[in-house]
Length: 327
Image 1 (spheres, rainbow, N blue to C red):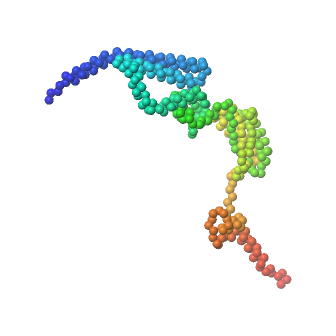
Image 2 (cartoon, rainbow, N blue to C red):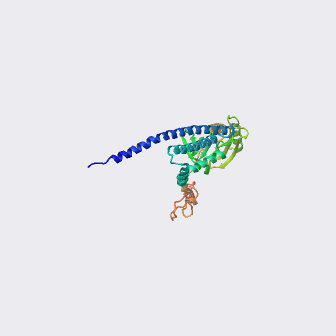
Image 3 (cartoon, helix red, strand yellow):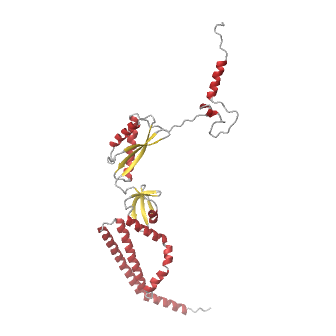
């Protein structure tokens, strides 16, 4: 069977000729895009410089410089496409973008939401780069506030990427929002100890520690009457309020109090429990028809030890005493 290849060959020649004709347009389009790359870099540096001179935080300057750079690059891509494909006019291109805008909006809804949340975070500044924050189960230092997400470095040197919309809509604790921070530890003393004397000793001990502020001064309050101890809430202030200072301050306070209280005769009680069986308690506790612990009632209730001792005494009193003169 003879195959007619002339039509195929002619089609390939036309495609090759069209490609060769398009090569100059491709080169010019790439050159235009490279020029816009340089313009985008210059615009980004200019925005960063202006934001820095205006006293804006580094995060705001960084994000807005990125946005300007992306806008310039988007214009560069459109111009390069119109150069490479002369039949593609700006009107048709924007018309196609308008038709597909709804689909793009639904597809990139989360990205646009995070972008807007990131801009609002940078404008309202609830926290800044370098702050130590707590968001949900994550705690660490804010390394960067990007357009889509915020980078958090945890204290065990791991990176957590948190979407900006989550940070903007949920609760965030900023530990370094203020120059000073109050910490507290709980210390238990015995019920027989003097609370006022223990308070005075703890305050004296805290006064000799480095890293604690004297204004505001430390304080000691009775927190609760626990099961086996009187719990005292020891409060003190530190500056700066960073994680390292907080951990070291708590460590020093607990160690100093642990050494000072027993040396002065105060008790640091351990948890204790006392278990009593029914025959070791009151007579009514051994009576299952009257007790309230939920035991099933029965008729032959075991007698308690008190009842047994009382009956033994009564029996001993009823027995006749031997006559000493009988012999």
